[in-house]
Length: 289
Length: 252
Ligand SMILES: Nc1ncnc2c1ncn2[C@@H]1O[C@H](COP(=O)(O)OP(=O)(O)O)[C@@H](O)[C@H]1O
Ligand SMILES: [Mg+2]
Image (cartoon, rainbow over all chains, first blue to last red; front, side, top):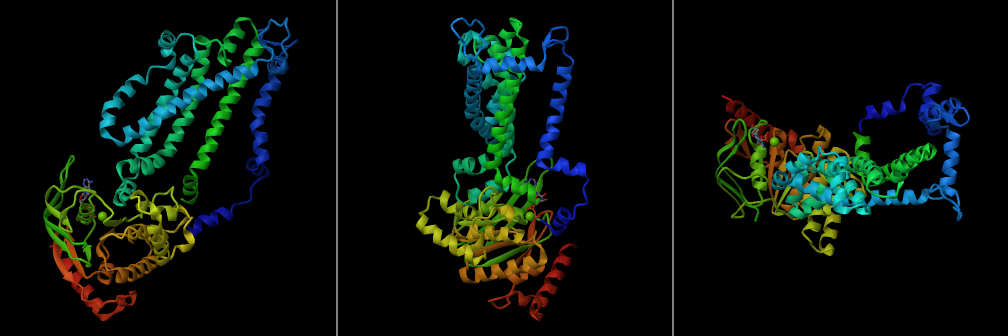
C-alpha cells in the first residue's frame, strides 16, 4: 500500500446527504426494501376484494394469511386441505434434498476438478465428456432419473447433483489450472510430494474459483429440486407449487415461491459467510493491492 | 558439498518458434563459492538457474549437483524467487516451516531453527502476519528464511532483490552478506545489476544472449568480510569499470 492510496482514502471529498445514506448500513437496508415494498403496495392497491387480474391472483394480504395457516395452522381430524401446518415439512424435504445433492456434487466435483486442472492425462480423458454432457439441461435428465430411481427421494437428489456438478467441476478446474507456477515450484523445492502439492498448494490456490462454482452450483441445485419435485417426487416445495396450482390455490403458490427465494438466498448467504472466513488472505490481498 | 557442474549444457524451448536459451554451456560452482550470473534480460540466466533447481529439463549435456545428475527439485537446493512467491494463505511462520513439515521432520528439530532464522532476518515480530501484510523487502526476507531453514547445500537466487527499491535492496544485500559470511553455503546468484554482482560474488560469470552463453568469468578479489561500504571503494570501482568495458565489448 502506497502513501498515495492512504491519502486518497482519508481525503475523500465532502459527500452529499444522499451519498451518506447510501453508505450507512441502515440506509442500505432501507434502500434495499424500497423496491419490494413499492411492488407490494402497488399489488395490494390494484386488487379488489383480495383479487388481482380478474381473480387470477390473490392480493398480498391474502397470501400472508394463507402462509400463516400453512406455517402455523393445526390440522384437525376434519381438515382436508394439505396446506395447514405443513410448511416446515415442505422446507425440510426440499432443503434436505438440496443439501444431499449439493454435498454429493461437491464431493465428486472438487476432487475431479483438481485432477483435471492438475493432470493433462485426466484432462484429456475426462474433460471432453464433461463438455459434451454439459449442454444437456437437467430437465432432460428427468425421464432417465425417473426410469432408474422411480418416484423417489434419490431421483431428486440425483438431478440436483447433476445440475450442481458442472459449475463446481468447471470452476475448480479453472482454479487448479491458474495456480501460480512459482508456488508449485517453491513447494517442490521444499520437498513436497505430488500429493502435498495438490493438497497444500493447488487446492488452497483454487479455493476462490471453487467458491464461485459452489455458489452457482447451489443456485442450480434449488432450480433442480423444484423441477424434480414437480415431476418426480411427492413432497417438498416444488410438489406443493404444482399441486396448489392444480387446486387453484394461487395464494399458496405465491407463498411457496417466496419461500424458495428466501431459502435460496439464505443458503447462498451461508456460502458467502464461509468464503469470507476461509479466504481471509484473499480479502487482505484485494484490500492491499 | 554444494558443487554444481554443467558440461556442454544446451536448453532449447520448443513451441511455434524454437528458442536456444543455452548453447553448449560449461559452468562450475565450487563448494562454498558465491557465483553471480550477470547479463542482460533474456540471455538465459533464469534458464540456467532453473535447470540447476530441477524445474526444467536439459535438452543436451550433463548437469550434476554434488556429482549426482539433477532430476528434480529438492530441499538440498534452496531457491529464492524474484517475487518471493510465498504461499499467500499461509502466515510467515507457516511459510517458513512448510519445507520441514512436508519433509516430516521432527518439530523439535526444525522449530528452534525456524525461530532463530526468523530472528536473523529480522522478522521475529511477524510470525503471524500474512505475506500480503508485509512490504516487498520483508516478503523476500521470508523467502530467504524458508530456503535457509532447510539447510540446503546450495542457495539458488534469481534476481531476488530486483523488484525492491534501492534502499531496501541495500539492506537486503547487507543481510545476505552477513548470513552468507557465517553459513558459507554455495550460492548461485542471478542478477543484471553490476554493483550487486561485484559486492556479493567471489566470481562473476558474464552471459550474452542469442545464443545464451557464458562469455567471461571475472574473479572478484575484494577482501572478505565485505559490507555495503565497499560499494564506494576505489577497488570496487576498478572492477566496475572493467566489467562495464567487458559488457560493452560483448555486444560487438
Ligand atoms: N518457458 C519458456 N518457453 C519458451 N521460451 C522461453 C521460456 N523461458 C524462457 N524462454 C526464452 O529463453 C530465453 C532466456 O530466458 P531467461 O532464461 O528467462 O532469461 P533471463 O533470465 O536472462 O532474462 C529468452 O529468449 C526467453 O524468451
Ligand atoms: Mg530471469
